[in-house]
Image (cartoon, rainbow, N blue to C red; front, side, top):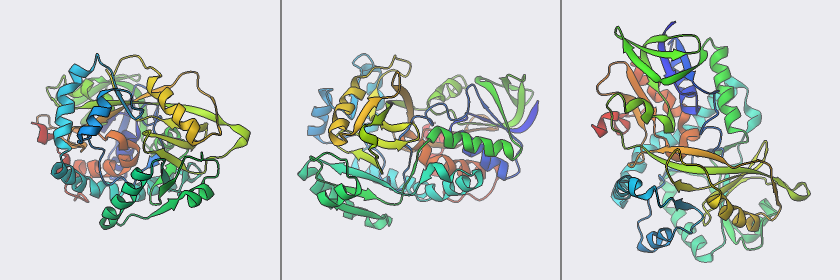
Length: 414
């Protein structure tokens, strides 16, 4: 079987890339070993995060480093066995998080973040998925007066980004979310982002749109990628598939493809968990809520209230555990006392693909003609999938890109 372009990976980034290539006239086959939207794209907090104009940085203050060093915080934990292996990547991440470098990363990411909602909106409407997307924004809440005061001061520094938000004092917050605990003193309601009540369903809906428009989704193994007679070839359930070009959108599994080809990208993995809960007395959570001190998100989802944890540094293939989830759940039951019983048998474990300079890899491979990369979107794969799919498709087809792709070039690691 032959096509013009193979897209490897049917998460939100891969599906979006396939749709944008298809819209530009490419004959595309989308390949994944699993069903679309079943990986990291399934398990996130469901935020299309227009307000995250500053990338998630490594903490720089001595106090924060000491707290995290004790490994007792709910938002970040690490495996002692994995720490020696992760240390070089963490050091590189720490260096890139210096104020001047963080500001440069924010500037480089801004063109992508600015367009994230409108690029999603176009696909949401075309796929008929408006029922799973809400334009309510999300609320970050505070229990510590000093931290709340600091947040109110810092938010003023974001004025140049044109973000819409409301500062909510205790009474205003309680009016907006009536079932929050009494220890919550206020919050910031970010109004530009959208929330998704079924992230995996959104990705599957985009994949269905791709098929409806004439594309093919075939299960296959990206690790079988090879060059044969000047073409790229991948094994699938329908036999070998060949193409002139291939786009790798494999998220946390990207190293399984690029490493055998001789590339050494500094890809790190931040693990995270989620669990769904019932609510007591049919209580409703009206908005997605981020507990800034706990580093977790509570979000109303189709299955119930989803608690999504922060970061765990552990071997990607290490067994999951409930240490971080249990810490966050204890805090969440104080924040939202109506949180009821668990609905999942075991916690879901996901893996976020992260680059230490806080920029994804988008563009051509430096040593293989016809090979393209689109991975490393860290905490914002759902947010950036469509906009990065557009940028990659513009580069592949020779269309003028909507923004300078240089900051995301794979060649920056050569």
